[in-house]
Length: 310
Ligand SMILES: Nc1ncnc2c1ncn2[C@@H]1O[C@H](COP(=O)(O)OP(=O)(O)OP(=O)(O)O)[C@@H](O)[C@H]1O
Ligand SMILES: [Mg+2]
Image (cartoon, rainbow, N blue to C red; front, top):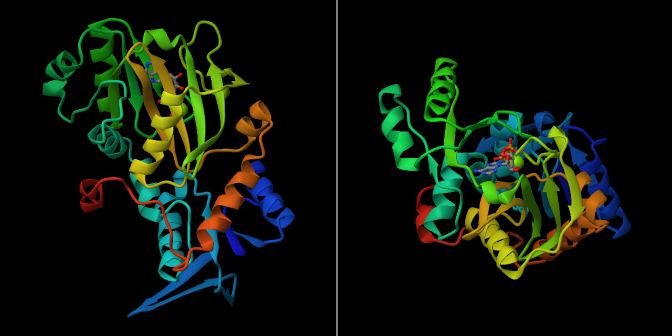
């Protein structure tokens, strides 16, 4: 197949591994910086140029679109889709996954369990909003946070209110969750490709922290997810319409809870922890999708309701 990888930096580990895995399998592959793709939109006419030359004829594209370029990057991806190129993660699926409130609503509507979550806009509603959640400890998360930065634990109602007031003062978007203490600072990253979990790792927070992010000093080890965890991870990716996803779960007394579904999951941590050729699994999946007769096979969200909301 003729494959494009949308990535801002060809030297990133994930990008390099995808290129390598594609070449090993005999595919032609090119890394395109999404910010250097420019487009013409006409009636039934979708054209794309890259650094002065027209690009066309790609069977598949793998988007690796960072949060900071979501808007432009998904427009480029949509243009590829309109030009008939297949993508394991459609632009709409990426937009669904990037919006925490929206993805939580979609997952919960499909019966996928997550930590109870509240959010609100007006400071006058904070006390009642917190009463909907129950007593602390609470986990307060910035919507734009990543790698554990902007995730806070509050132990007293007055602390929850003070943090919320401070965030509102900064015009930050956030949500508040029940604290799942029994997770004991661990989470489970399940790497979903198609309808399989191809690798999983358990990340453990350093002592004294509840956040298991590797960037916060967490450690990773390979993990064998239980059947119910595999089922939830695969279903969560499917609800959002993602063919490739990093699904983060925490283990609670009532079963696995989804924390986040990442549409551009990194390969470095998971390949190092599991020694699985995740890049190869992605390329094989994308090649199989590109072979579909209409060349447009993409994972669709499960419910008609979530489709209507697009
Ligand atoms: N409700 C919760 N109860 C217990 N622990 C939690 C809860 N939410 C998050 N954590 C812990 O904190 C870590 C960071 O939280 P989370 O993954 O939601 O934010 P992030 O990694 O900063 O952002 P994102 O994953 O969206 O990029 C999790 O990996 C988990 O270990
Ligand atoms: Mg996380």
